[in-house]
Image (cartoon, rainbow, N blue to C red; front, side, top):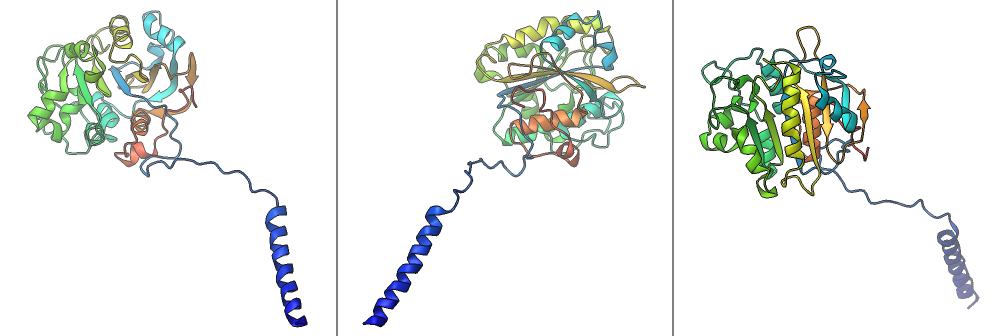
Amino acid sequence: MKRYIIGFSVVGAVIALLLAFFFTRPAAAPTYSVAKKPLSVPAHTNTPALSHIFVIMEENNPIGNILSNSAAPYLNSLINKYALATNYWGVTHPSLPNYLALTSGSTDGITTDCNPPGAGCVVNVTNLADELEKAGLSWKEYAESMPSSCYVLNSGLYATKHNPFIYYGDIINNPTRCSDHVVQYSQLSSDLSRPSTTPNFAFITPNLCNDMHDCPVSTGDAWLAREVPKIISSNGLRGSNWLIVITWDEGNSVDNHIAAIFIGPTVKNGFRTNTYYNHYSLLRTIENNWRLPALTANDKSATPINDIFKNS
């Protein structure tokens, strides 16, 4: 009998020690539930949830031709009100490879301003439009002075080299897809009339005069002063988070340092960032916003433009 009492005593002592351990040890540090990001999105994704991103591409002016230039009062008013990347660069020369870089993550071996399809410069690569569609997102290219949808020849003030989406084989070789998405600029106003017809992503190509290519900075500035407020105040963007980016394809032959202006309700007011960015950075920012995979190593390794946003 004594042996059983001793046994129970030992068991009781062990239980007492265990209870003392669990109830007297320091409390564990609090844990926080963090949603896991898709594997295709880098850990430094800080862009807000934007429903719409519009890119307006101007032409052939280094940042010194824009910043504090009296010929560009509207652009400078946007700079003062919203955000400017002061260390933003084109990736090459001439125009076309920069457009391809921004929409496919590569210059795709194109080194000239060749014209499709006869010039042999249609490229068969996965591009931003492909990834947007795979994600169930809408997109359009709006080209000013283009004679008709999916027009692939130069015409007057319309230059194909400034319309990147007609250089992708899976778009230009699909007439219905091309005509539905590569449209005349005049269609933008009707698309913006209601949210259901406003694309998630829009690439806007002014004509050769209004993009500052063949006409002075003042002409392009005046065009932007007429057109950008229409986009901002449209029914299509009302009540949503959106971003408009105005940038240039390249600078000039000796200076490829260009401006990138960021406009929208989620953008810091009067902010300037000196972080190094380029067209691949802008592409990465667009991809991050919609959790799209990187198209190439160029955009995958590019620094996304996060510091312009209020939540950064």
